Amino acid sequence: MTGQTHRPHLRFDPERNDTGATDTDAPTPYARYARLAELHSLQRPLSAEPSEYTFIVTTQVMELLFDLLHHEWSAARAALRADDLGTALAALRRGHHAQDVLVDSWGLLAAMTPGEFGAFRPVLGEASGFQSAAFLRLEFLLGNRSEGLLEMFRDSPAAYDELFAALRTPSLYAEALGVLARRGLAVPAVPVTARYRADPAVEAAWRAVYTDPALADLAELGERLLDTAERVTRWRQRHYASVKRTMGGKPGTGGSSGLSWLKHAAEQDVFPELWTVRDTL
Image (cartoon, rainbow, N blue to C red):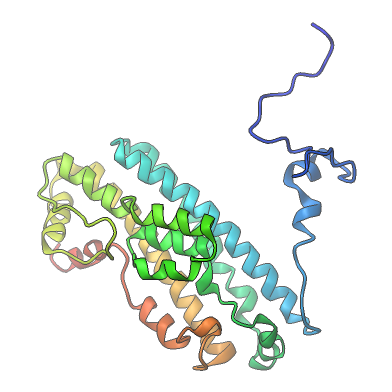
């Protein structure tokens, strides 16, 4: 023993900044670990409107939660591919908690008046939440896929390549249906790059799952996936309601159709057969 403090091998050193120099300004190990100085330096309003600060913080919180959800859903997807239902269910449950916080985060913006939002909206320019690569990764994971959406990232090679790869990786739902197929249920192959469309054969497979006591573990998977899907719908509904309250039917920033697009999204069920199968159970 040399008397030196043992430090575990890390992929990064939380006491060092991106330049490799020791961060002597961080007052505590906690601040270094969580990179608090950097975190608290990222809120930079461009207008004098006080509500813009709330808007920026809320947006950044949502982006972090998008990353957390991607982590959990990716873990669930990998576990399903390996037929490890226990690990998949645990990841989905952790994701549910993140989704609940994500849905509730709209409350930070719920009371923003049209006047307050309008006071700083011009500084957004063409910026729109629709341009979030992290959000689009989640949509691709859910099976809501369109290669045309990659065009807005043509000038951002790293984001484009990541999304291109995500578009060609089976979705969370596709891997769940793969589990059903390997258990002997008649499930058609799911197109990888195309938007998922409901299939009567998939509904029939879920009906068999829910009516056969020997498949109770798969029924549990269906319920946890439905918990995920319901929270996606809540998120979309809160997004729609918040935009309707703060800006009405005006066109969205970034050229989106705004309220009409959000309403259409809120009406689309995720994992559709898990909803329709209830008509016949």
